[in-house]
Amino acid sequence: MARARRGFKARQRRNKVLKLAKGFHFSRRQKYYHAAETVKRALHYRYIGRRLLKRDMRRLWITRISAAAKMLDGSYSKFMGNLKKKDIGLNRKMLSEIAARDFDGFKAIYEASK
Image 1 (cartoon, one colour):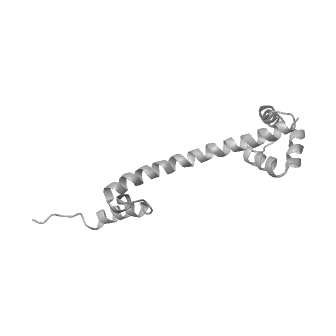
Image 2: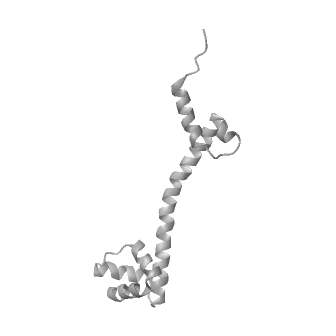
Image 3: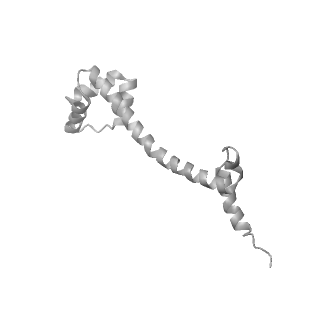
């Protein structure tokens, strides 16, 4: 009896992995076993990277706000605390953009929070 080589569905599954392995070097893009291992790792790093990006961006925003607050002889924590007390609903991303691009606008927000 002839050996069954799995046929269409298996080839489809392998081709999906090999397509994701496009751009890898040597046998990592040509041989299914090596490609599957590398693609699995790459997808895992991609997943981690999405979370790290959020963390890094928040860190950047906080640094920008802190620097702008220090220029106005204040501190980040007191500024954010005052914003919460006065119920000014600006998030860190918007505050950092205002601090970086429109310092006069940030100064007005800072004064309003006092």
